[in-house]
Length: 131
Image (cartoon, rainbow, N blue to C red; front, side):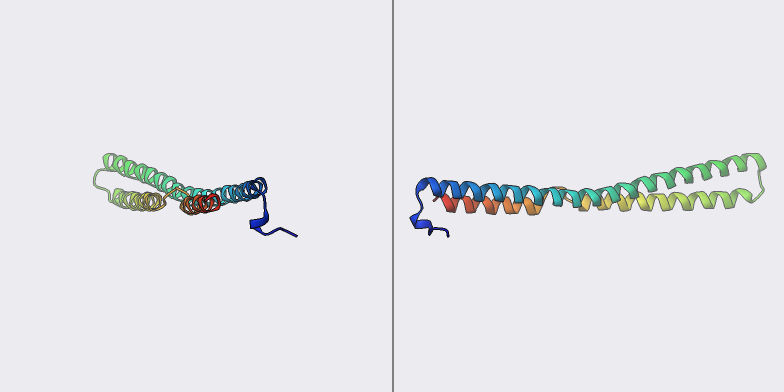
């Protein structure tokens, strides 16, 4: 059975404070790991959008270049028009994906906000325990 806090010696109070602080720090580290892991997952998805957008834009560039080659080779045959339209559409889709990824990265603040907030609360709690 635990003694009431008033009946504990200074040494026992400090030992109790030390155990509580140690537990609190372990919990904060676990919270930080979880929070950073979640944010890293979202960032990975946004980087994936950017990579996919870049790949599509590159493929679009290849179509545009093919269209230019067809124009130069066949001057006046409308086959180039269909190739050019396909290239422009692919570039547009790539641009959209790159912008979507950039916006997602801008939205996500990578700082572990919840952990920072609870660390501030823990510091206040520790001050109250000592004072």
